Image 1 (cartoon, rainbow, N blue to C red):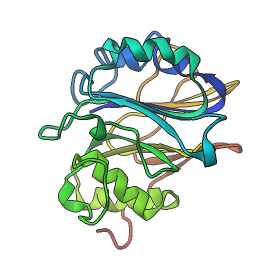
Image 2: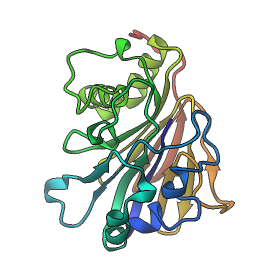
Image 3: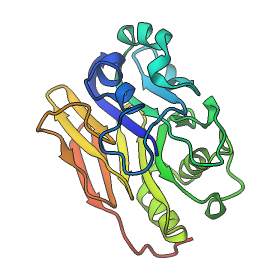
Image 4: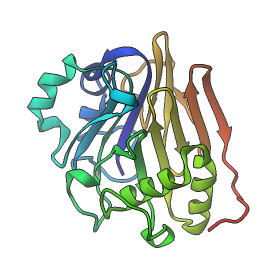
Amino acid sequence: MCRHLGWLGAPVAISSLVLDPPQGLRVQAYAPRRQKHGLMNADGWGVGFFDSLSQGGTPRRWRSAAPLWGDSSFASIAPALHTHCMVAAVRSATVGMPLEATATAPFTDGRWLMSHNGVVDRAVLPLTVQAESVCDSAVLAATIFANGLDALGETITAIGAADPGARLNILAANGSRLLATTWGDTLYSLRRDDGVVLASEPYDDDPAWEDVPDRHLVQVDGGGVTVSPLDHKPKGSR
């Protein structure tokens, strides 16, 4: 259910992360190699990024409900777009959820970008949050934004306790930090000389890719990469 990728490091062309790699998100849209749920990710795509012109750290976004592999306009522009921090995703929509750009990650609160790889029962999420779409991922993102990203681990473990069948792989960025969770699906990290990639699956066969264990929280910032286990039995679970 979706593939996503995050970057934090030196400015690079967006195409070098999303389109150019031999098994990048464009290929993962129609032929993912390590996807546990679903066969394709043809229900939309999105890229959100920070650049040197972003006013007040406001992220920029480009989203579509069409498959990534058919978007020639994005393919022509992506080599000219450079970013030091990015979240990108290709979508496989949950059954019954709308097919529209607003239902496609990354979602934002104006400061953070966020993608959700998985599925969650909207009945366990608050009805009061202001989401970009009625889809489960958008409501989940709005819930996380409302709780604050510093409480990401606590929010995920609480929702996971309320919906045992949920898959809650989150990827978020604010221009200086990447945060991610593993909860029911895959995540890998690649520490390059110029930065760090977090991705649902490797975009090439570099042996330096590392598997992030299930039910862990990943934090990437100027101090490096930290991976810590999520509490399996949170207090006060909703």
